[in-house]
Length: 211
Image (cartoon, rainbow, N blue to C red):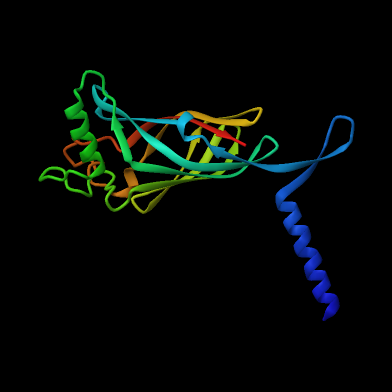
């Protein structure tokens, strides 16, 4: 029993060590230990823009804030990452639209000014779901796999993105669509007539993280 206990402790220690570092061999054949490094989001330097449309001729532009997050890198490989998005920070940035209309549209996207045509649960329903969560699953050949949890439901998607390391910084950049067609969100459910909001929303991300 004692031998089994010692073996279990040794195996556990080996497993923990393998999760926090790995060994690589350089061009001279020398083994080098690569440590996991965690980078924390710089919210002030990070931007997330969106574009939604009813047709190619008519749409709206805006921003939403990524407020918290971090990623862990093992060398130049992504190990894990997660982010919080404040859905109450949704803003409309359409050129030529006055501030009153921008505020009116943003309120309906958030569900904070419901009326007969725009109930609270239309689009993002921020009174009930103020935050969205993004979990990074993997990154390979310029493709970022992630899970987006919004209005309490998960969207699994893979998007084109660039992860770039520069000294003590890591940047994640990409322009990509995310489809919410399968989530049953009022407002994105295109009626049989063919009229409605396109459930595929275009995003432009520039995330900055530091050690």
